[in-house]
Amino acid sequence: MDNEFKSRLLELRRERNLSQVHLAEKTGLSNAAIANYELGKRIPTMSSLITLAKFFDVSIDYLVGVKDYD
Image 1 (tube, rainbow, N blue to C red):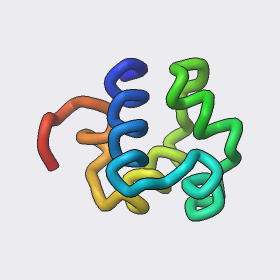
Image 2 (image 1 turned 30 degrees about the vertical axis):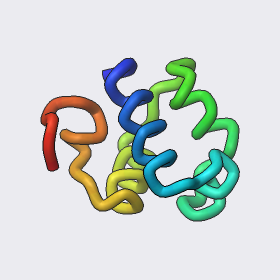
Image 3 (image 1 turned 120 degrees about the vertical axis):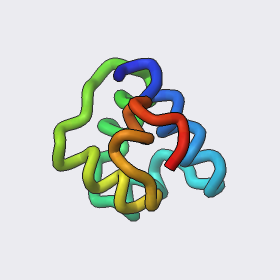
Image 4 (image 1 turned 180 degrees about the vertical axis):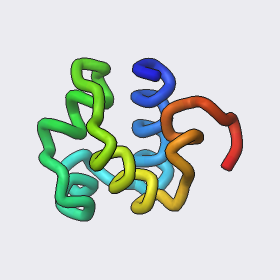
């Protein structure tokens, strides 16, 4: 999950032209959490996965790399 998740998170964030700070503000997650997810230093909690999937309007399966489409 780690590599695929961090790649997909970065891709989704960049597609929407969001900085890590802006994504953190819009989702209620910390800037440090977003940065650590993208660096692969931290694995998100289920709550964080749900928050990110809802924000980006994708499934958790897509976000973590189980599916290549949503």
